[in-house]
Image (cartoon, rainbow, N blue to C red):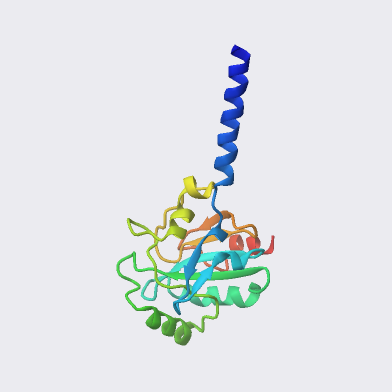
Length: 182
């Protein structure tokens, strides 16, 4: 009887662990909104590496838009893309509306990679995608709270978080370029 109880306990705990691991979300489980107000299921990006960046128009790192666009022009396509998420979480450095942000990105930097609607990347109103990106409990990989504008999250072809580059890291850094080429 004791052996039976131990076996049943092991089966039960194994079932719980398996159920929890299959419940883990991936990047593809989220739907976001484009800067033009259209729903964008991230599942559309299956098979691509994705660099997710929180952006701002009035930040010391704003010139990174230029290198993000170069990165996109060089590697963007069937295997890689960039998604920008404007956010006003740091010293009100993204005060504009979606229309104003789109105009700024287009006229000042010629941005052609997908830009999403302005969101919150931290705090009590954090967007669900950013909650997943920043919480090991949700993404299964790491805790990586957003420290400032232009923090970069690396998503693999299977929708899993694989790494993060801090705001100060240039988008054309060896770390990011080598990850894309892997």
